[in-house]
Length: 247
Image (cartoon, rainbow, N blue to C red; front, side, top):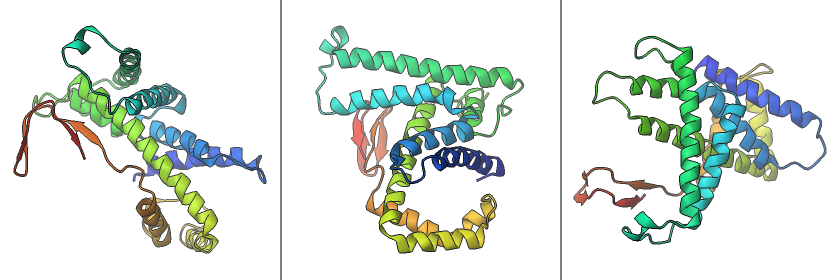
């Protein structure tokens, strides 16, 4: 993790903690607080933008995810679905278009700010995607749809999983106060009262144990679905195009 990325995370956390100071002694919905935090961090570190720019994308992706989850076991009839769509399908298409437009707005903004040859659009996640989109080598070049899809995945999957991890870790530390004290002592000993740095973070063994145990007990993702875009061999199996694979 680079210095600029750590600084971005620190700034986001400081903003959250400053807000918490005025609510000392009161109950607080930390899951919602971490939703805002992780959204801000992803916007800052991956897309060099503020949470306000990414907020709309997060909101649209959440709505799209809810529609997908309630239709996951519904069977679509290939021929009929060309001529007739349910209200959920119509809403999904609308949300997908809005997400596409929102991501492209951020991409266009990056292209306008940074002009020049390929490989000059920045080293954050968005910069790497735009560099690949402008790559002169057709074998390495990303399509515009790939660029948007990768952005959607990073925005939503990164935010949802990290948010879940933080919320469960805080709950476990609240229950097991002895580990809370161990973690606090380690941070004070290694990091001190200053801001975290990459060298210090790498030495946090107790914190790493707590994170790994939280992931073991409450994994944020238990599976994922992928659609085969071209025929591929997986071990002894040949997966045909358009097959949906549940991993």
